[in-house]
Image (cartoon, rainbow, N blue to C red; front, side, top):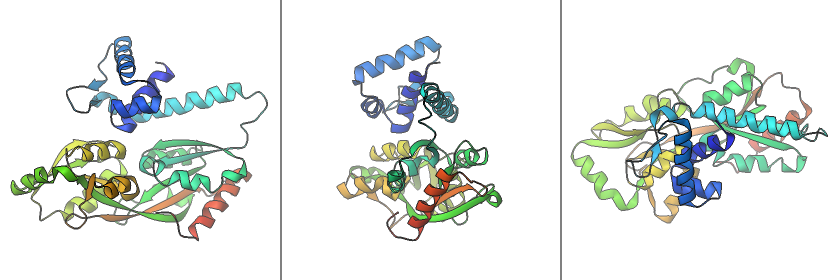
Length: 302
């Protein structure tokens, strides 16, 4: 398995389609499609369900995404360390961020300490994996969501935690497919994109959101994915209703491509949290943490 293969597969997973992935990887779509088939031939397995539109990862591949992210991060770290003959990577910090936060608030947060001349390694993962990276010292600071009524933050007794903002989790749907959604309502069902039960947003849906959907009839999960970016892409096509962090859906809602259904379906407020081990003493981490604490005292995030 080659690093570039892993990153090609992750690009499709994280951006929701071949088209978006090839733009990210800076290759043409025909060339990217050929590369995907070459990977499948080399491995002797089918990686994508091409009967879906857009094509999506096969279930057995989806189950290995977190492992592939870890391998990608580890190989890149190893490559950098081997090339570092003069110790230039010593002023580095590793940030673990939930996928949705990595695509919305994390760039602004990192920008607040850019002047400290610190190299930042950003690892995107689900909430439990972000916290696991903190507890095992593979990451210095984590950015995660928290919601009242959802699972308590694991390992909180060992962590220093600060609230740095809020983000709403809102239901969205393609504005040009509202007729299809209304037809589903008339049949007594609500088509939704569900997050898996073993990830944080899946727990939020099952413990907080779905119990409030008593007036819409049967909740029908038409698709399950752990990736908010994939859920967003499916909502854009009118496949089903998706609950998306508002900053991630903001541009589509403002442009009219998506409609915010919060007036008829439940939305919830999530807390944006920074966490680190309580015994972290690295001067670099301390400098960054002080900047993040200062952010918590001023508006602007969320």
